[in-house]
Structure formats: C-alpha cells, structure tokens
Image (tube, rainbow, N blue to C red; front, top):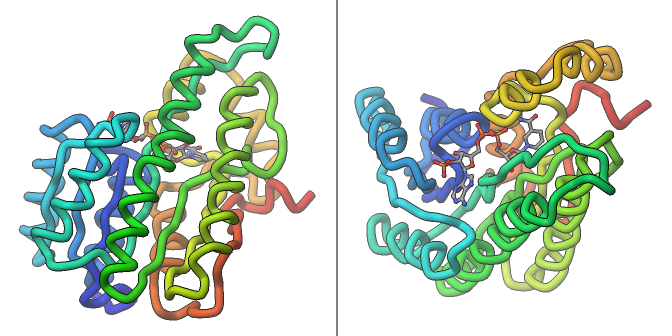
Length: 253
Ligand code: NDP
C-alpha cells in the first residue's frame, strides 16, 4: 500500500474489466476506499473480495450508466456506505464497430453515444452534487486519443470521446471555484475487452496501431489507472480542465 489516495472515497464506473478493474486495484493499493460500479455483478463481487483480501476497503453497486437513476443510486450508495464522495473515475464505455462512417448503423451510433456520452453526463451530475455537499472533490473522465484526433473507421466513438472532452472542460470551468477539479485521461490503445474485440475482428489492427505509436506497443490497463490516480490525488491541486494523453506518444507525432 502507498498513500496517493489515502483516506479518499472513490467511485469507479466500468470497474468490472479492463481499465476500470485496474483502477480498482491501483486506487485501492494507493489507500482509497473504492466503490465499483458496472452491470456484471459477478465480476464486481469477485474483485471486491480480491481487494478486501489484500487489505483494502471496497464495495460494489450494480449500475447501468445509461440509466440516470442507476447513476444517482451509485453515488447515493457511495455516500451512504463511506460518508462522502471525494473522487470519481467515469470510465465505463463501449467501443462500437470499426466500420466506415457511411456504413455505420444508427444502432451503433446510439449505443456508443448512450454509454460514452450520456453515461458520463448521468454520472457526473450526481457526483458533482455529492461533492458540493462535502466541500469539493476530483473527477476524471475516461476519454481517448480518439477524443483528440481521428482514428479510422470509428466515427461514432470519435464523436463520443470528443464530447467527453467537451463535458470535462465545461464541468471544470463551472465548478473550479467550488473546489471540484475535473480532468480527463486520453488513453492510447490499451489491453482490455474492447481492444480484444477490435483486434479479434480486425486482423493486423494491433500491429498497425503499434506501428503508429512511438513507444511501439499497447498499454497495460494499470498504466492508464496510475495516471487517473494521480489526477484524482491532492498532488495536482492546480490542475483542472486538462486532457492527459496516456498514449506512448501517439498524438505527439
Ligand atoms: P472494457 O470493455 O474492458 O471495459 C469497459 C467497462 O465498461 C466494463 O467494466 C463494462 O462493464 C463497463 N460498461 C460498459 N457499458 C456500461 C454500462 N452501460 N453501464 C455500466 N458499465 C458499463 O474496456 P476498456 O477498459 O478499454 O474501457 C474502459 C474505458 O476506456 C472506455 O470508456 C473506453 O472507451 C476507454 N478507452 C479504452 C481504450 C483502449 O484501448 N482499451 C483507449 C481509449 C479509451 P459491464 O459490461 O459489466 O457493465
């Protein structure tokens, strides 16, 4: 255990796999009391047991971020379980199909927008309300390098992740004077269920992306989680409204 997030209460959405599950482990190791939210309860209970066995404090709440009432319930559960909400990692998201824009189905657009944009919208509002009631806090939204630049055949995802950047900036601006910092991480290609699906259905995609990444590799989910942990911590009190690429240099070219 170390102390980057010592004593903080942090809600993590999309904690049942990938970057969110890594965040649960990293934040817990850094001293946070964590509440894990997602739809697959079996995954959440397994992870909560793992964190508790390692000496952490953790609880879970089943939550579909596309449902506003679920997001409110997740925040209420966090506050009733641990007394307040200091930090939130709005990470839940879906990848959608890799399809040319003119062939992409409206159903894909709707699913990607509902989860990746409305999901953040649904969560950030009760999170801010809870933080205002307890003197402030820090929020990190999970955008993507696709929130900063285009990547091929992922137009709905790119539009959604740019919207997450916009929401991050708007919220940071509105609540900076009330003790709430709002930032985003913009991961490059990271090992998770989303990329396993993309790579599985698009042979050669991982190699192509890696060849366009200066560090020449895919990130491990813990590398994104560590950046989020720092943004949620008190080590960067003057940092708000920023979007931090964690991408092996991808957008720096
Ligand atoms: P995973 O598929 O491994 O994780 C996605 C998580 O989101 C799961 O825990 C899933 O849980 C949860 N989730 C999906 N839909 C909902 C929903 N409606 N309500 C609640 N939870 C939901 O992929 P990643 O770890 O890669 O994805 C995490 C975030 O990282 C996403 O926002 C993604 O866009 C972003 N990202 C990922 C990159 C990558 O290369 N992997 C790069 C850039 C950004 P469950 O199914 O149990 O609900």
